Length: 126
Image 1 (cartoon, rainbow, N blue to C red):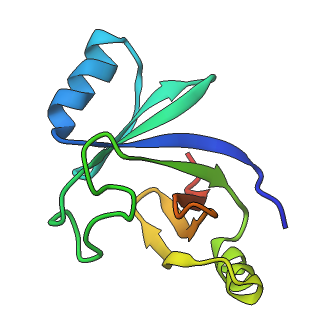
Image 2 (image 1 turned 60 degrees about the vertical axis):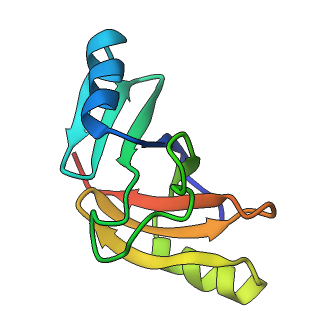
């Protein structure tokens, strides 16, 4: 198996509104997607996902990397997050979050050798 490509850098922020103001208004990055949990900014050269850093945004709790504002994770595009989860279990790679749906697609979160979360996602069609 292999990833289909780099998708985005996920930044955990103390204030979603302030982060959006900085990245979208100050830096001028276009807003590509927005809901109550994340704001995605960027363009052809790449995307940054600004992610709320709190435990109350949904029933899953806080994302494994988001223990402090400024924490980060990397997301790669894959065709089948569920198949990645099965393969990770088979070869002994830690699964931090099982495959699940989000408003923007389906994803699984694995741990790299240093324990950093790596999200493998199939994004919804735009």
